[in-house]
Image 1: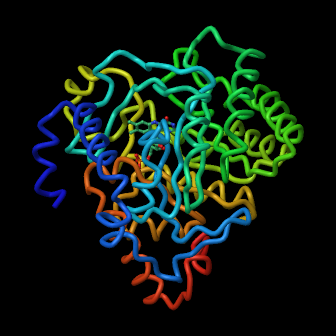
Image 2: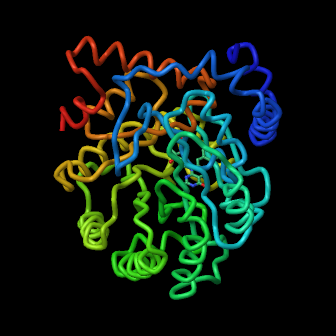
Length: 364
Ligand SMILES: Cc1cc2nc3c(=O)[nH]c(=O)nc-3n(C[C@H](O)[C@H](O)[C@H](O)COP(=O)(O)O)c2cc1C
């Protein structure tokens, strides 16, 4: 069905197509348990994953950025996602960057976006989530308010404000310290700044008497480099010292290496985060590295260029407990979730594993 609609959608400006699709999903959402779930939501017991004391009915989740304002959680559940990560949400609302800010690179099966953390702000999203009855694990992704004047201690306070409002409503919280679309840069990927941030976040968590798992979302390594720098090791060390429960790897990339798209077209598009298939090798590489660095003790969510069961299975074998999708959905359509789940069950059976859990990290 999506194959029929896709050429029409792809004729529209990318963000307009995006908004149209999401508006249609909102219309359908109240009836999704009857209209959508019967076709998409079947679950195989071998796909269930236990993480942080939560049961994920399958390891395929929605990546942050597609449902920034948590408007469609029940729709994603009906599509068969095992979990949903909403956000990024920031303490203050933001309209994001001027349009156009989302671009397709069909030759590369990729997207470039400089959305700029457009979202309704923590208070409105918290109000929405308080009314929500979700059935599958819900992650809330937090980012600093999109304002280059909020820096240093003010940036820490800004993160703490959204954490205070939203952490009580989350099954896990992801701190997005790796958004490439901010004027001030990725300031919390500096180990000292990260140390200050995590000290403050965990103090708020203790004050609220919460045990919600806190994860960190990291940037991809540059594609030309397979050896990682000591800064990443330091980041992981600082994160573990504070009790970070896992990592989400990876966010979009700022460089344009190895793309088929005409360089002139890329120059016209301008800056933004690259997502989709060109990220796959890097995301895999970072996953292997993180799994080794953490001795397989911290659950890892792998994201970046997953658009098939084969790729999802590779990530699980490389050490991912869970995977997430974004750009793959734009190119493959919503049926991708079901196809990945069916393909995973087949591959697990072929390789003699009785569950996803048994295959995690087997190649690491
Ligand atoms: C349009 C767009 C908006 C995004 N917004 C966010 C965001 O708000 N927060 C975040 O942590 N990641 C965001 N991401 C990154 C995705 O969650 C994901 O890490 C990245 O796209 C790589 O996965 P993919 O190749 O499957 O798309 C966004 C990605 C896209 C394409």
